[in-house]
Length: 166
Ligand SMILES: Cc1cc2nc3c(=O)[nH]c(=O)nc-3n(C[C@H](O)[C@H](O)[C@H](O)COP(=O)(O)OP(=O)(O)OC[C@H]3O[C@@H](n4cnc5c(N)ncnc54)[C@H](O)[C@@H]3O)c2cc1C
Image (cartoon, rainbow, N blue to C red; front, side):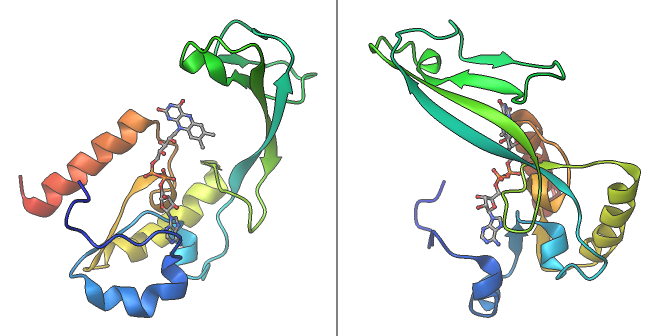
């Protein structure tokens, strides 16, 4: 898909905006919509995560790639055992414990908080976004939605169909 395109990695759109904007007729923006508008109505809230990795001296820790913990007492929400994604047969195993964390500026914004307060705030940003002629807002951060992969691919295909009138 990227063949013949100019691709720049490790480039923050907001830092390079003045240089980048004139390069394209249309922009697909997949970052945070509140950041795009410089938080003019306030910050949307997100949930973040902390990942804790461990190498264990055992060939098999939990017999499965992902085990969820939904009880109140366990501080992490799931344990990933990476080797089971690829049927690894190594002597040791690597696990990752995933802990929920309230998002602060600078953290990775993993999940939107689609409660009443944040949905009302998002609506204000969406109204601005709907009037942008040059920018297409797409993906989980620009739409402030929880998307699984199949949702985000479906949304991308719909955006293409709308753009090209297919
Ligand atoms: C912890 C976690 C686990 C998940 N597990 C699953 C799963 O098991 N199955 C599943 O189907 N889905 C899962 N998902 C959801 C899936 O990852 C998302 O649906 C998908 O990645 C969303 O794609 P996107 O393009 O909207 O956003 P992203 O993949 O986040 O892409 C947005 C892109 O925009 C770039 N960007 C943002 N701001 C800027 C900026 N200022 N300048 C330049 N670039 C910028 C980012 O670097 C990123 O590359 C999971 C998500 C999380 C957070």
